[in-house]
Structures are given as C-alpha cells and as structure tokens.
Amino acid sequence: MTTRPVIVTRPAREAAHWVADLRAAGLDAVALPLIAIEPVADAAALRNAWLQLADHAALMFVSATAVEHFFAHKDAGVSLAGRRFWATGPGTTRALLRAGVPPASIDAPPPEATRFDSEALWERVQTQVSAGVRVLIVRGGDENANPTGRDWLANEIDAAGGLRSTVVAYRRLAPSLDVVQRQLAIDGAEGRAIWLFSSSEAIGNLQRAMPGTDWHAASAVVTHARIGEAAQAAGFGALRVCTPLQDALVASIESLA
Image 1 (tube, rainbow, N blue to C red):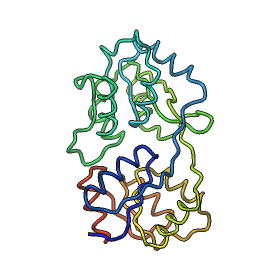
Image 2 (image 1 turned 180 degrees about the vertical axis):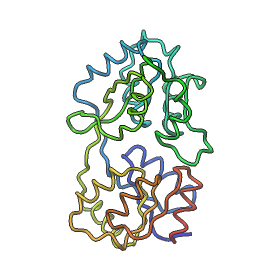
Image 3 (image 1 turned 60 degrees about the vertical axis):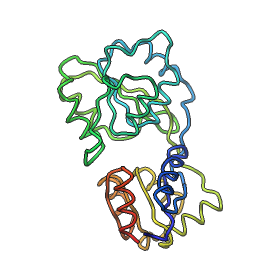
Image 4 (image 1 turned 90 degrees about the horizontal axis):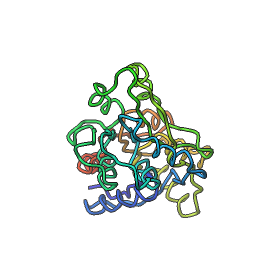
C-alpha cells in the first residue's frame, strides 16, 4: 500500500466524498479542488428550460453537479413523466435519483462499463434520436456562463437529425490556491504525493496556478484516456488510467507505490 498521500482534485463537494471513500479504503487522501463551482448569475435560462421541459424528449446531464444546479430551479408544476434522462456515469445517475427521477427513466452506461463518457452513453441512447427529436444538454459554463466542455455528443445528435439545445446550469472557475494548498501542489509536483484527476480542466488550472513548474517527478491516476493525454502533455511522469470506480482507483493508486 502506498504511503504517499493522494491529492483529490475534484470540485470541493465531490472531492470530500472521494476523500472519505479513499480513506475508508486505507489510503491517505486529501482534497485540493482545482475547479471551483459557482451558480450562474442569472437563472432565467434555467427557469425557462423547466417551463419548456415538455418540448424535449430527453435531457442529457454532463455531471452530478449539472443535475443538482438544474433541479434547484425545478418548477413545482412541471412533471418529469415522458422524458428520458441521460447520465454519463454512476455519480450523475445517483444525482438524478436523489432529484426524484424514476430509475426507469434514466439511461446511462451500466455499472460494469469500462468507461463512463459521452461515447459510452451514446451507444445506449442513439436509437432515441431521429429527425426532429429534441434533446436538452445541461452542462457547466465559464465565468460568463458560456458553455464549456466537449461537443462530441451534441455533434452526434445533430448528425442523427435531432434538435439539441444547451442550458448552462453552473459555472466552472479556476481556484485561487492558499499557502497550504500551494505547498500540497509542490509536494505533488516533486513526487511526494499522488495526483488523482477526473478532468483535463483541472490539469490546465493546476498548470496556470503553478507556472513554470516541472511535473516530470509527479505521479497521477486519471479516470479517462483523454485526461491522461493532458497529463502527459503537461509533463507528468508516471501515469495510470482507470475507471472512476473505487476498487479500480485504489488498485491504480497502489500500483504507483
């Protein structure tokens, strides 16, 4: 078992859950959120999306955070019946269930899937989309609430003849590291801790927060091959790619011991 601490880089609330799970598995985990989550300044578009919910055959959520911020504006008179709710992974599925979405209305990669991403989701939902079918994508945005993230699934919907629209449910911002957090980042850069990344955006924010840092001594576990490519491009030395499931994460972290 590794004696190095594990730096969990997810947004604060999700990081707390991951830290607790990893500690329960016997690892020394600590949170260093590299993405700050803030609500949108103007929720008019979210409220309007709820009023137009019946116009959409399906809603696609990019994350559990998207679910939580979207449902925070739910109109009490709106029914969820007749809609499909798409989730890219188990965390988003759990958030939909907590929000009151019936399990039978949720489409997501199965728990035993080898990856949780837009491609895996599309394999399950593509037959739902044909000419004129409306899909609402609920996602995060930048500081000005402009949509951010990949457009791969949106492009697939377009190619299938579907009509997709997007609503930004929350903003993803770069954090400001305090003295303690900066020292933790230095420990990770110098190989005294193991990084855990579930977002390429977090790697970019880390690079901008620590300009000029040499990452070749750093070790990282990443939850998708694309994130691994970002870590490799940043100069990280030892890398492991695994699914974002606890057993796989623990095994990958311990393999870096």
